[in-house]
Image (cartoon, rainbow, N blue to C red; front, side, top):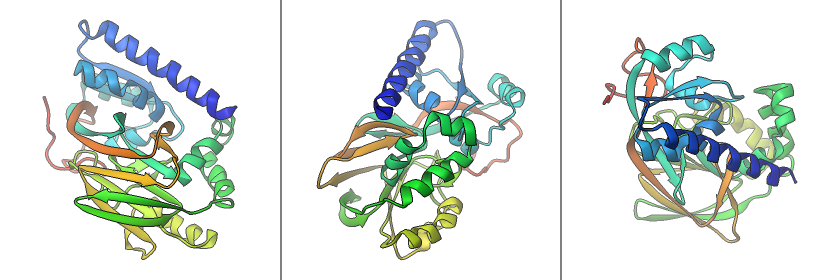
Length: 278
């Protein structure tokens, strides 16, 4: 089955990345990861364990973490940043103790992950996300969820819940207008749309990040939250299905350090404030 194959690939990739970092942690001063968001996600446990800073050479389909950090897609330019950029501390989210950089989702995000095959990525590139999304939208069914955050329990009849740590996900979608990967909070939104057509109208706002202005979108933010559903549902973290509801989210503030462009402005699209180095 495609889902089983995807899970097997992820386990193999995670073991390989973690084993390499662990094996050489005492001999190097940084880790350089060449790949997409799945590669970054697979390496996250070893980055946390070793404390090593890392650089990114974007070679995936979406490269949302690189986009958040202002790292160019050109491999040579990205390699120069990995070798001599400035260090910046960023947050890491945990979903039932599974680390993620960008976003975790339930509902539409999981269905999209299952629909977006490796062949579609190769054939269509970033356009593959749109092609798969249109197929998934046509068969969406709402579900009921309870979101506990900041002492409140919010009940939502939804087709999609996303919990964002970073700014970008899903090939350039935006968690929120002010979302940053170093702002010390997780941002959650739930799409409570009643029809396929209403969700289509929402898509441009989801890309810009101003969907929180819509009446059909429930939002909240905090360092910890929990989501429960009537029946157990799969949870997608950084494009991989890794856990199931009920799911408890936590934030690790400034947990890892990454090399970002040296000449980038103090405030970029996905990081905020003065760089927190070393």
